Length: 369
Length: 259
Image (cartoon, rainbow over all chains, first blue to last red; front, side, top):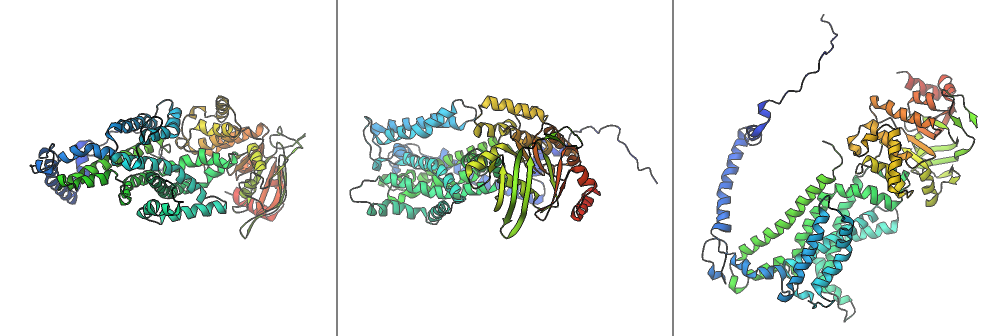
């Protein structure tokens, strides 16, 4: 029999990891060549990239035509970016009068100048910025874009292009989130009437295709309004889209609310917090943080769904590009048009996606790792 | 004022009534959880409630701050009767602190923010004053250096001490503890119990659901044993542990003390 008693005299020192666990070679080996299947897949992927990327770059850049007046001026094999250059202003502003376009630039610059600092951590005076962006800016933007206070009125049927897309997207995004939160809270309310109203609203809007409600908003609604009432088409579209997005948002937020442990509600109640303080200070900050991916998913979907306003005759960014590519001067440039549209939509959506990841990291206080 | 001859002998109990429960019943659906509870708690009393799981002991103390609603009988806390009247409920919740089994700290707020939230938003205390109070209580639970961390960075024992400090920041007259040490690793239990003993010494009225019989012997002036939704036996700790009257109590004590 050996002696069972053992006492460690000194603590074992920490040693550096073996070479096979760190460095570039180790990374390559672990991720790309860990076994023969992975090695084959790596080789196949490299081959596909070699076949696809150089021709794409040739078409997009090296062999592309950058200037010209019609499609006939595009003589090379590459893309005909002359179309985008000639029509660029129209893609941005639609049929907004040329002399008044500075108003749109100013409006969006103002939003960028105040909105972006609001999204960055550590910027001072955020409270005042937020008050400006959410309470004052909408009126300034309306005045700039539509007119009034000495500025010429530009009717909304002259709005179009990226400007219209951004107006639709920004307004619906900003309106749908708070509205969605309200409906999500209502759906979980103890008061039957409130709950039934919220459930009915959510299920009604969520159960109908966006195209249908857009049609109803633009074609059918005026039939029910008293004759002579003027109800702007873009305003109707905005309302319809905001409600539609709010219904989706409500369900996303509800998912977050359900993920909050009961103990959080109880701790807040036990301290004497009222319902709204409990929700505003304890529950919603946590619930919304959990559903940031879902919220941004809805935002991105919404941003791209603005292209559907095409069916009610609004010339948003995509439809104005489509109409340019079907103009007799530019027949044959459909690919260029769609690629350009895709790039612009992708930049906005990818931006939102990256920001949401940054936000998730910044707000993470769980320290699980 | 009467001095109870408990182990510590110095903590006094006044004859002012803090909580009065008269003929209280509660059901969860068809299930009769609490049956005909009668109980009077005097200011400064330290009561330990024990009993097998499902005996209704947690439900009982959760009725006192209306986290659970009772259906029959009366609960009177600080001369306010608990009814569906929201003002009364809020008034009682301001005076009654509660510590939970799973701490229930707010994970998105720092420790300091956890402590100052209710004083600022419920009691309308100015922020710097609330922070001063918060630091005072953090020092009392011996973790002032953790003020700017988040709950997720603290150990279970530290989180529970923060939870106690958080309740104390509201300056409550009564403290409820719902199995405060049941979710803790064994080596962290004593740090929480030490804080609770310290609190008892300040004369706080405490109702504590726990199976820490050492704590009960040390600070309680009364131990209540519950089973199947009823109060089966209550007594001073010495009598309760050394000389339990009911068979059910004897069985329970033999089970929890035998190992």
